[in-house]
Image 1 (cartoon, rainbow, N blue to C red):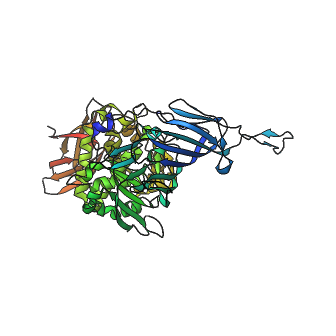
Image 2: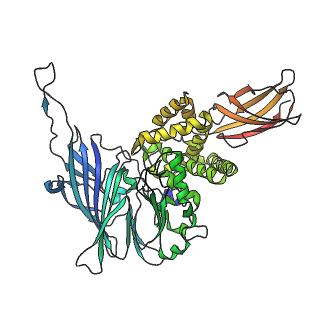
Image 3: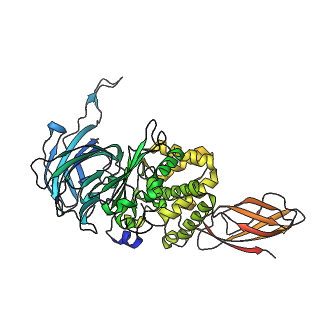
Length: 562
């Protein structure tokens, strides 16, 4: 996602960190029956949770906040469902589960049967109603038209959806939405049918969407609004998905339709580029929606929401934002951080991959300028100096939407690419995506894959850039040893942060008119003298350090040492 306004994003509603999913529970599928009213914000829902459970799970705990009120619960799948006891403490619904079947088995060489803990698959349905305080945003647009949009990040699904509300427990989702017939309904997945609700005035309609790939709860959303569809057609044919095309469309308020496709005209190119670079697109289609999300963009799987206000400005929704949110479909959606402290695996990746699209579409100079801006923004941010990128101590999840997770995380990927080279870097990211697609990952797992592809030990790199706060603060001077044809780089690192191990690209202009570009391998020391590779008979007349903004450092070049 991207912020629309950072203070707005962080001050709106605090989101406290929550523990990981119940260890012995693995949700497989959610089915949500949602009834949206003709007016007002009182909704009715039934959430059916199909889950696999193992030893130790004697109760299912579903996150659901007051004022939502639970009226009943049932246990069992389909026609086998029967009323079940429950409690709701205003934060979670607790449904006791029957004893786990643990069959006795005779083991070879052991005459006595032993008990082996088993697993089973259960379904729990919870029916509830109320006016959600958050998560499902029910409002009117600038023309006074009724609308409802899901907006769950980070753990705000619990305001309206009874779920195990943590990114580590991904699941399939099916939506059955009853809403006024005059409004469009869009949700994750593929439309699987719609039908009029008999005997209702004004007319109402029930629409079904089915998501065939597992996603985290923060991406499970619906849109119910007066939307006009602009079809972008069949995109990335044979590339995003083998043997078929990926449909894309834009949904806007009626008065915005005449401005379409705008920057969404590049949606085909963006999807094609990422599919070729990383791997096939994970979902069956991609919708882009004008919405009431609090963020500038929200990467809901297969249904990206963009803030309404962006559509009402002369510039519209920019290509960079479309690229950022589309990149999330790979990183964040298909491969999801297992723990909130590793959010950079989502936001840092989307930031860098949007810049990679700039490199692809606009060239090297535009890319270098974008990376320089990303670095500048990060270095100037107080949180970058105070906290690490992998921030497992942060308990305010909205505070993780910062320039560590976005800009510094993205820039670390840029440096990693230079450290290992393009072949190893992109090969590793393709492997990472293929390995963890539809699952979860943490940074150590990414590191292991990159190390294997690069045949390098990279613990030092990941530790200094991701597990420590700050940036390199570097002062550089040089001296020329004419007798030996050497140029020595004298590097001082300031005392604010522990010194960094650096690869400093250096461009030299020599007195004989020749130019050279070399890389100085600088040790993690407060003071270091590094002999530049090569022989330089002529004295340097100019020296530029990091000319393409490739090092996360504030660099001062002092000139020739005397």
